[in-house]
Image 1 (cartoon, helix red, strand yellow):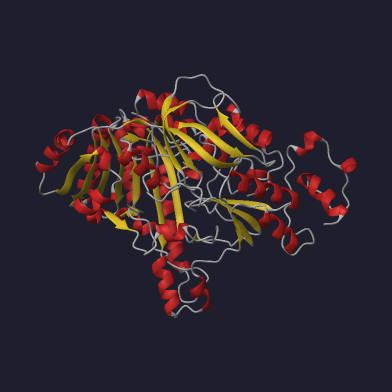
Image 2 (cartoon, rainbow, N blue to C red; image 1 turned 180 degrees about the horizontal axis):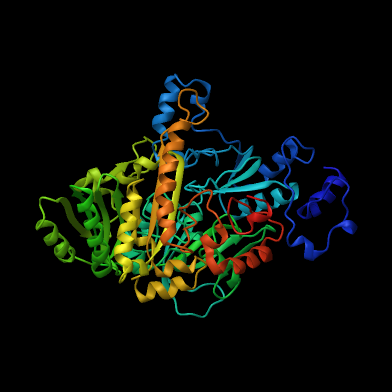
Length: 596
């Protein structure tokens, strides 16, 4: 490397040009809002083959060039290799083993999985730090991926150096943890590596040690990445709060390549930002330590459908259900979702904790009794099941007693016990036409607002299906969950939200593959139905906000929608730890400076 390239690498973070010098660099105040200018592969500043080799020599892991999981289809869509690839991408764990894969296949007119020219297969924080330092020295865009579970495509980026933390999956269950630099009493906890999936964390914490850690519902979602840093809701968040609220400590590689520990006693501002401020923004979390809780006696589910035989009957059902939720379900025992279908159907996919089957059934008895009085208007088919809580993520238990509830990772090389919930299978490698979310304040369920909410839900359902995720709102949550969740960066609107309303349209297509492309006419029609439904919901939820991990790629006023009054504080922390925007992603804190 020439002297000029060395000099530019040293000050490139300020947007160094070919003739820049320290004497002509802008003042520090200006640098705070000046992003690093990214280098592209065709430009002279792009690292040479010798530079890449030197980076590889300093890694404990490997430097590789990613390939698409559907590469065979891109070459020949009619080949047997393409058929095999299409089957392979229905397995979320297969996708997570691929450098060039993401869990979604893309989003119409928004993003596609883009292959980075090079990727670091990181083994530890040292590899991550080496990658960050190399990227800064050469002005490279950074992409960070653990499992690739990101609807908005923030796990990939064009012309980037990908830092892939998939191999960093150590799990340590700790009986007495004290955050570094703190003098607080020790608490039970679990430490997870950046690539850990929630299935692995749950099997260690719950199945083996009979404790609970608040994580995600999908077994293949990453435990320490965007899910946690974006807030992180699980089936029982009304009891245990968000995953972000349970973060005790994080090991983080910052924009200058340093590895630091952030907790309530040191780098507390960064620790707060990581608890809901969004992933891929403030640094690369290489380890996360989360509190664990006593295990309840049971976990359980209530599933099935209520069919209304006319529009009028469905309207009345929605009025009854809104009141029923407010009076019987808005508490720490219940979570998960109810789908509202244009066919006048309520599809129940609810979860509970700490109740027996008899107790859970008793909660629903008033609604069951009312429905039974109107057999000419409703057909009812739902059931309740409970299991010992320590069996919740036991592959052997489900394989024996509820095999239809799970899908096993059947690859010959797969570790025994890998599975995902059958209900999540339809989303694997799906291509999105539209995806929207909106929090529903608890006030809408109360008093004179309740019938207005029911009417709006009915009107919205004339356009599109949608789902009410009651575990993704903290109204009715336990006092402990509320207390800890208040001290996070998540939009404070969640504290008063009864549910997160979600809707979307998608297809299993392969963009870029002849004969498998998305149909734009179909997409436009389906997007229109989603927009019509959401227009009704937005009208009754001004300033309610949207959840950053499950939201619209094109969300308007996203800063306020995702973070509310927390945004300015998050932006200050972003500029303190990453003043030159080394970490950047779509609609992440500070991304307006790049127009992302």
